Image (cartoon, rainbow, N blue to C red; front, side, top):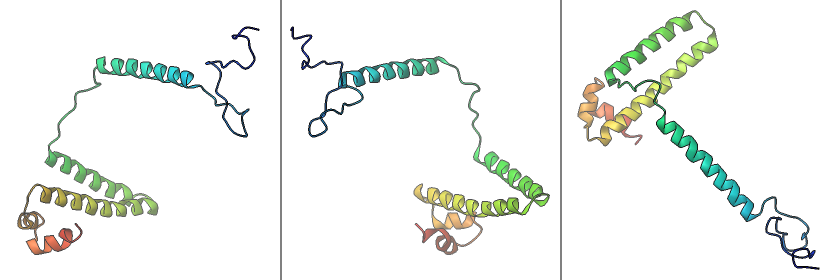
Length: 142
């Protein structure tokens, strides 16, 4: 019998047997099979990335000034109040939750202002309060 047809000859396309008591259990893929799968996936990813890179965006990104953004948010909140006035109680609860979201957004904004070197006096001025009150409200948490 030749080496190619011998029953105990290792075959690199067959899954390797695990050692130990369970020597009959085989892995689902050999390292060579896994490598081929990975190479195919990488080729697909590269092809998709190339296709996306050549594709123009649907519309150009519009830069929005911060004050315009805040004014739009204010309009949304006012409209939400009017809509919730004609709605159910669970929608009122969701509108009330916006108050906590707004407080969290203000805290993030104050922390950002502080990270750029703004003083508590300037933050207090913007918040229409004293620098001490601003620090007590947002500074102790940091």
